[in-house]
Each structure stands twice: as C-alpha cells, then as structure tokens.
Length: 345
Image (cartoon, rainbow, N blue to C red; front, side, top):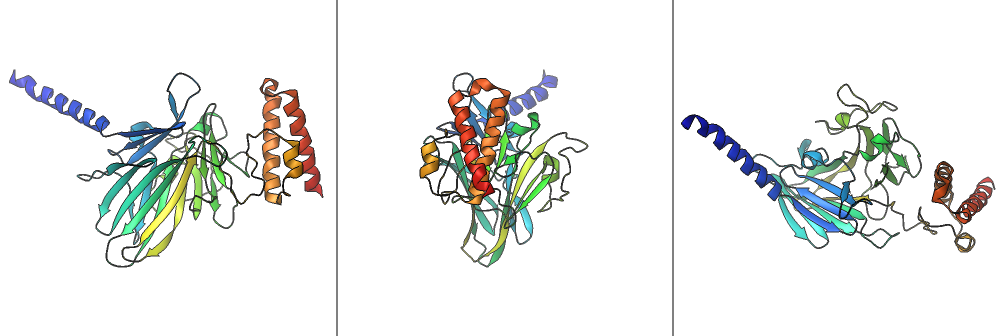
C-alpha cells in the first residue's frame, strides 16, 4: 500500500495544480471579441466570433500555452523584464469598465498596469477592437530611462501564403523592418480564411512604435532588446518553418520619479482609419458616386490607398464572380477609372 502512495500523491497534486491554473483565467466578452487573461503566464488571448457554430470564437493570434508566445517587455536602465509570472510573483487581474487589467510588480523600481479595453472603430458600431494601454510607473524615487516592446505571435496568414500586408504593401512574405518617420504604413494585416487581425501602427489612438519587425518568431523572441535583421530573409529557421510574428518596439524615454511611461496599442478585426482623412472611406463600404463627387479632394496618399483597395476587391471578384453583383462591379470600375485619371493629372 505504501509503495503506491507517492505516485498517487504526485498525480493528485498535479491534478490540483491543473485545476488551479484554469481557475485563474479571466475572460471577458464584448461585441464580437473574447479576451482571456492568463495570470499563470502573464499572457493573453484575443478571439473573434466565428461564422460557424454558435458562440464559437476563433483566435486572432496564437493562443496555445496560455498565451505565452505573445508578450510585452519593459526595459529599465538597460535591464529587460518580461511581463510574465515569476516564481512567487503572480500578476494580479482586475476587472475594469469595458475590459480588464493586469498589475505586474517585477521590480522595486517600477510598477506596471496593463489595461485591456474593448472599443468600436470609427467604421462600425460593434466592439471590434481592443486597446492595450501599458503604464509603467517609476517608483524608484529617482529619474530612470524606460522603454517597452510587444511580440505578437501571428498565425492567420501562415496558411494562406501571404503572411502580412499593410495599407501600402499588398504582400509581405519575407523579413521586413518598418521605421518611424521613414515608413508610412498605418497598419499590419494578418489574414486567414475566416478571420483577420489588424495591428494599428499610426492613428489617433496608438503610440507610434520606433521600429516594427516582421520576422520568424524565434528570431524575434530574443534576450536582446532589438533582434538582428536581414531584409528579405525567409520566415524559416532550422527548427520552425513559416512561423512569422510581429515585434513592436517603442522608444526609450527618461521618466522622473513618480512619473509614468505609457504606450497604447490597438488590435482589431477591421482596419482603423485616421480621423484626419477628410473622406474616411472604409474598405468594405459599397461604392457611391455621390460620395466621390461630393467629398473633398483626396490627398495623394488617400487616393493611392483607395486604388489599392479597389484593385484588391476586383481581383477577389475575378476569382469568384458570385461574391459581387453586376452593379458593384460596374461601380468599382467607374470609381477606379475616376481615381486613375486623377492620379495621371
């Protein structure tokens, strides 16, 4: 009897731990989105309602292993701290109006609050976006430099052959770096067959990152603050094939005692539009000749963006003519003709 006691005890403890782990997960549903926070890892998952089944949600990025493959990190005085569970130090989870938040206490020099709030974009009324605000409070009693970064383990585009696209780049299938003040891309898109994730880079809501890396996950999941970069390198490594991810790095700032370093990030299922755009045409808005003739003149950038959308929509219809009416096809071609004539003038 005694010989069997130890294995039974171990199994019981493991089972108890398994139940505790799952009991700690915190879930919030709003609109089309489902958010899960995992205190056991400090990670999170974002899922969108599926067209198939009832109350079924599909992940917008990798959510296995309790969301641990997507993470945020803080740099304080050159030292890097991942926002994750540490031995004897579990992040606290709290419900807040419109969402939830993590509270991390990783060091005597700073305290981190990470708030996840559901939002509606300016194009639709339902909650289709998640704003993540990471606030780092300097509690050291002295002035210190801080920076932040986030790794999102994207997956939707991996099975489609087009890992990423942006409002300016229709296909990104190799390693790429975007730099603040140089590249004007406003969002990164990771699109699958039924779900799409947009990572906003530049709008009235987000903090513009200093650099954005699109590369193999292993190459971005490094101990160094910034990864190595080789433009055009594939998303393959020796141990992982076609495993892409996005790393956003925000600039370092000097924060006084009791001051706060804050960054805002937006994940969405629809593309966010800059409210400074005078026309504010949304990608899935049906064409209206009245809108074109009565709207203010488009800037060169907005005209280019609209042309790219029209070309993409026409290409989709050419593959499957059943998805559009004859009226829409005629409208698309008319609008494209107008914009191309303006482009040539």
